[in-house]
Image (tube, rainbow, N blue to C red; front, side):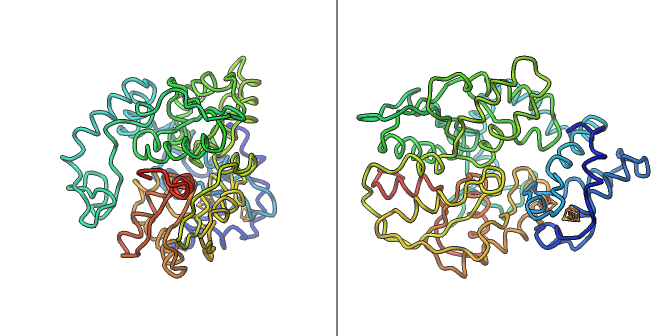
Length: 422
Ligand code: SF4
Ligand code: SF4
């Protein structure tokens, strides 16, 4: 949505206030400017020239949003707050420029895949200077503040990314189909075991998996920060790499990557000649791992898992892609496992990508409610379909001393199959 088109979206807000009861940021900050209604009023004031978009107040208020779209889901007028926020952040990036660090990462690093890979490789070698192993295991803690809260449990960048560990094609015995895997950055550089679990579970269930080498970042961190030119480049590269592959489906195992491929590339590439059909083909072919497997059906018997498991809905998987029942269906199919629901499984965990870097204190408070819910349920394992949620919930549980593991749904299933090392 262009800035010039926003007026017709903002006037749809009838100021009913229904968004207040679902907004995780409003719940913590209790200020009208943090909820959808307040943000819309501010955007309207900017459109009318009553507020200066270049001032720090507008940028600050537009940053107070997880892009969880809970407000959108509950809005009786159907206001597309997500698109309003993206348009506002795009205007801010265009008018004020991006902060230096984001400019370096997005414009220099992400625009050049080889350079980005080199940067991640160097990061894996030198991260020990900045991070130390957490006393209880399970991740690393910052040695210095360096933009990260020193209590924050982070997962290190791996020395060998997922795409360097696996062949470009893994065949299944007696295959019933072939899928292509979009790995995303978190799985490739931080959680290769999730990727290995996805491949193991899909091949056990009769699907060859191809992993195109030329793939890169989906662009989510870039477009949510308003850098549309870089996001367009990344979207084009993904569409070029995947849209015309001879595969039954393109599989994603990250809620945000899947939402980008299915929902965000259409508007992003609307003005790119020759892309409309390719974008539509890719969107139609893209499936979340659990969504695809539940529809295809499990054909291979699991050994089972004696554990109590609960499930956290990633906002981008549940709200943006509508994948809610399928992961639960797969988890419940594990022999010996007891499934228990959280009280509020779809409440945002507070991660929201770079939001948890720029607003860590707030994202922690939001995460506390998730951790309280997990602790009250007493599950041994929390499963989820998004690596970013996984990292943030692990961090919260570690800081609060709440026991239990956090696994991707694919890791849980791989473990139920008895896969070594998962
Ligand atoms: S729920 Fe929708 S219509 Fe109601 S105040 Fe919020 S944004 Fe406006
Ligand atoms: S998207 Fe989420 S965080 Fe942002 S205003 Fe809506 S409910 Fe609040």
